[in-house]
Length: 203
Image 1 (cartoon, rainbow, N blue to C red):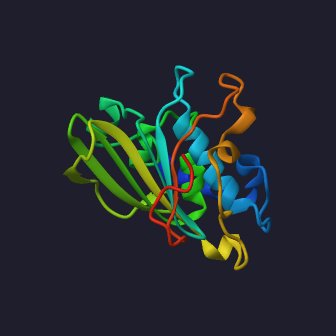
Image 2: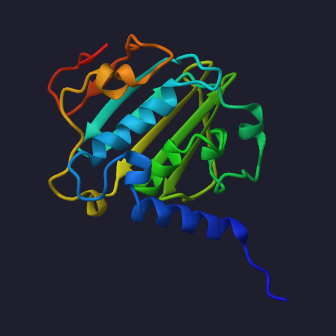
Protein backbone atom coordinates (compact mmCIF):
# COMPACT_ATOMS: atom_id res chain seq x y z
CA UNK A 1 0.00 0.00 0.00
CA UNK A 2 1.31 3.43 -0.93
CA UNK A 3 2.07 5.71 2.03
CA UNK A 4 1.27 9.40 2.11
CA UNK A 5 3.03 12.15 4.07
CA UNK A 6 0.29 14.08 5.84
CA UNK A 7 2.38 17.02 7.08
CA UNK A 8 3.60 18.32 3.68
CA UNK A 9 0.06 18.09 2.32
CA UNK A 10 -1.13 20.13 5.27
CA UNK A 11 1.43 22.84 4.52
CA UNK A 12 0.41 23.07 0.86
CA UNK A 13 -3.27 23.17 1.75
CA UNK A 14 -2.78 25.94 4.31
CA UNK A 15 -0.63 28.13 2.07
CA UNK A 16 -3.01 27.66 -0.85
CA UNK A 17 -6.00 28.54 1.33
CA UNK A 18 -4.41 31.73 2.66
CA UNK A 19 -3.46 32.82 -0.85
CA UNK A 20 -6.89 32.01 -2.27
CA UNK A 21 -8.81 33.72 0.54
CA UNK A 22 -6.58 36.29 2.29
CA UNK A 23 -9.64 38.25 3.45
CA UNK A 24 -10.53 35.38 5.79
CA UNK A 25 -7.25 36.02 7.61
CA UNK A 26 -6.52 39.71 7.04
CA UNK A 27 -9.94 41.31 6.40
CA UNK A 28 -9.05 42.48 2.88
CA UNK A 29 -8.54 40.59 -0.35
CA UNK A 30 -5.68 40.41 -2.82
CA UNK A 31 -5.42 43.64 -4.74
CA UNK A 32 -6.40 45.82 -1.80
CA UNK A 33 -3.82 48.52 -0.99
CA UNK A 34 -4.56 47.81 2.67
CA UNK A 35 -3.30 44.22 2.57
CA UNK A 36 0.33 44.79 3.75
CA UNK A 37 -0.88 46.95 6.63
CA UNK A 38 -3.55 44.41 7.60
CA UNK A 39 -0.96 41.62 7.66
CA UNK A 40 1.17 43.72 10.00
CA UNK A 41 -1.87 44.51 12.14
CA UNK A 42 -2.76 40.84 12.55
CA UNK A 43 0.79 39.80 13.49
CA UNK A 44 1.11 42.71 15.95
CA UNK A 45 -2.21 41.83 17.58
CA UNK A 46 -1.13 38.20 17.91
CA UNK A 47 2.18 39.16 19.53
CA UNK A 48 0.58 41.64 21.92
CA UNK A 49 -2.12 39.38 23.36
CA UNK A 50 -1.14 36.57 25.69
CA UNK A 51 -3.18 33.46 26.28
CA UNK A 52 -3.96 34.59 29.85
CA UNK A 53 -5.67 37.72 28.52
CA UNK A 54 -2.92 40.14 29.49
CA UNK A 55 -0.92 42.35 27.16
CA UNK A 56 2.71 41.60 26.46
CA UNK A 57 5.45 43.99 25.44
CA UNK A 58 6.16 44.34 21.73
CA UNK A 59 8.05 46.51 19.30
CA UNK A 60 7.65 46.86 15.54
CA UNK A 61 10.25 47.67 12.92
CA UNK A 62 9.16 48.44 9.36
CA UNK A 63 12.10 47.65 7.09
CA UNK A 64 10.54 48.47 3.72
CA UNK A 65 7.17 48.83 2.05
CA UNK A 66 6.66 45.06 2.23
CA UNK A 67 8.81 43.90 5.14
CA UNK A 68 8.46 44.21 8.89
CA UNK A 69 9.69 42.71 12.16
CA UNK A 70 7.66 42.12 15.31
CA UNK A 71 9.50 41.41 18.56
CA UNK A 72 7.66 40.41 21.71
CA UNK A 73 8.23 39.06 25.18
CA UNK A 74 6.16 35.96 24.47
CA UNK A 75 7.78 33.09 26.31
CA UNK A 76 8.27 30.11 24.00
CA UNK A 77 7.52 26.80 25.62
CA UNK A 78 10.43 24.57 26.50
CA UNK A 79 8.65 21.86 24.56
CA UNK A 80 8.73 23.96 21.40
CA UNK A 81 12.45 24.66 21.68
CA UNK A 82 13.53 21.15 22.58
CA UNK A 83 11.32 19.21 20.17
CA UNK A 84 13.36 17.94 17.22
CA UNK A 85 10.35 17.24 15.03
CA UNK A 86 7.92 20.14 15.52
CA UNK A 87 4.24 19.49 14.95
CA UNK A 88 3.42 22.76 13.24
CA UNK A 89 4.62 22.46 9.65
CA UNK A 90 8.13 21.47 10.75
CA UNK A 91 9.30 24.94 11.78
CA UNK A 92 9.84 27.18 14.78
CA UNK A 93 6.32 28.46 14.22
CA UNK A 94 5.51 25.45 16.39
CA UNK A 95 6.27 27.68 19.36
CA UNK A 96 2.93 29.35 18.73
CA UNK A 97 -0.28 27.75 19.85
CA UNK A 98 -2.09 26.24 16.86
CA UNK A 99 -4.91 28.74 17.38
CA UNK A 100 -2.48 31.63 16.93
CA UNK A 101 -2.71 31.64 13.17
CA UNK A 102 -1.44 35.13 12.29
CA UNK A 103 2.34 34.44 12.00
CA UNK A 104 1.69 31.33 9.94
CA UNK A 105 -0.74 33.08 7.61
CA UNK A 106 1.71 35.97 7.20
CA UNK A 107 4.47 33.49 6.35
CA UNK A 108 2.19 31.97 3.72
CA UNK A 109 2.12 35.36 1.97
CA UNK A 110 5.87 35.90 2.30
CA UNK A 111 8.80 35.01 0.09
CA UNK A 112 11.00 34.80 3.18
CA UNK A 113 10.39 34.66 6.93
CA UNK A 114 13.02 34.68 9.67
CA UNK A 115 11.83 33.51 13.07
CA UNK A 116 13.90 33.70 16.26
CA UNK A 117 12.92 32.44 19.70
CA UNK A 118 14.88 32.58 22.92
CA UNK A 119 14.45 31.32 26.43
CA UNK A 120 16.84 31.23 29.40
CA UNK A 121 19.74 32.48 27.28
CA UNK A 122 19.26 29.87 24.56
CA UNK A 123 18.27 31.21 21.14
CA UNK A 124 17.13 29.43 17.98
CA UNK A 125 16.76 30.91 14.49
CA UNK A 126 15.18 29.50 11.34
CA UNK A 127 14.36 30.78 7.86
CA UNK A 128 11.27 29.83 5.89
CA UNK A 129 10.18 30.19 2.29
CA UNK A 130 6.43 30.29 2.51
CA UNK A 131 5.81 27.77 5.28
CA UNK A 132 8.75 25.52 4.41
CA UNK A 133 12.02 25.70 6.41
CA UNK A 134 15.06 26.29 4.21
CA UNK A 135 17.30 24.44 6.65
CA UNK A 136 17.76 23.34 10.24
CA UNK A 137 17.46 25.65 13.22
CA UNK A 138 20.57 27.58 14.15
CA UNK A 139 21.59 28.48 17.67
CA UNK A 140 22.55 32.04 18.60
CA UNK A 141 23.25 34.09 21.71
CA UNK A 142 19.93 35.31 23.02
CA UNK A 143 19.67 39.09 23.46
CA UNK A 144 17.15 38.86 26.31
CA UNK A 145 15.96 36.24 28.83
CA UNK A 146 12.81 35.34 26.84
CA UNK A 147 11.16 36.49 23.66
CA UNK A 148 10.43 36.05 19.99
CA UNK A 149 11.29 38.03 16.89
CA UNK A 150 9.86 37.36 13.45
CA UNK A 151 10.62 39.17 10.21
CA UNK A 152 8.33 38.83 7.20
CA UNK A 153 9.20 39.74 3.61
CA UNK A 154 5.83 39.86 1.87
CA UNK A 155 5.62 38.49 -1.66
CA UNK A 156 5.67 41.51 -4.04
CA UNK A 157 4.06 39.47 -6.81
CA UNK A 158 1.11 38.74 -4.52
CA UNK A 159 0.75 42.18 -2.96
CA UNK A 160 1.15 44.23 -6.11
CA UNK A 161 3.55 46.96 -7.16
CA UNK A 162 1.59 49.87 -5.65
CA UNK A 163 0.88 48.29 -2.26
CA UNK A 164 2.84 49.17 0.86
CA UNK A 165 2.64 49.22 4.65
CA UNK A 166 1.04 52.51 5.67
CA UNK A 167 3.27 55.37 6.76
CA UNK A 168 3.16 57.07 10.17
CA UNK A 169 1.35 54.20 11.85
CA UNK A 170 0.52 54.66 15.51
CA UNK A 171 -0.09 51.94 18.14
CA UNK A 172 -3.81 52.69 18.35
CA UNK A 173 -4.11 51.97 14.62
CA UNK A 174 -2.69 48.48 15.12
CA UNK A 175 -4.50 47.81 18.38
CA UNK A 176 -7.06 50.45 19.30
CA UNK A 177 -10.57 50.17 20.58
CA UNK A 178 -11.13 46.66 19.23
CA UNK A 179 -9.49 45.25 22.34
CA UNK A 180 -12.39 44.81 24.75
CA UNK A 181 -10.19 43.81 27.69
CA UNK A 182 -8.17 47.04 27.56
CA UNK A 183 -10.17 50.01 26.21
CA UNK A 184 -7.15 52.32 26.44
CA UNK A 185 -4.67 51.43 23.69
CA UNK A 186 -1.45 49.85 24.84
CA UNK A 187 1.61 51.82 23.76
CA UNK A 188 4.58 50.25 21.99
CA UNK A 189 7.36 51.58 19.75
CA UNK A 190 7.06 51.51 15.98
CA UNK A 191 10.33 52.12 14.13
CA UNK A 192 9.94 52.91 10.44
CA UNK A 193 13.33 52.51 8.74
CA UNK A 194 11.92 54.10 5.61
CA UNK A 195 12.12 57.38 7.51
CA UNK A 196 15.32 59.34 8.03
CA UNK A 197 14.82 59.57 11.79
CA UNK A 198 16.43 57.04 14.10
CA UNK A 199 13.95 57.69 16.89
CA UNK A 200 10.80 55.62 17.33
CA UNK A 201 7.90 57.20 15.49
CA UNK A 202 5.42 55.95 18.10
CA UNK A 203 5.55 54.85 21.72
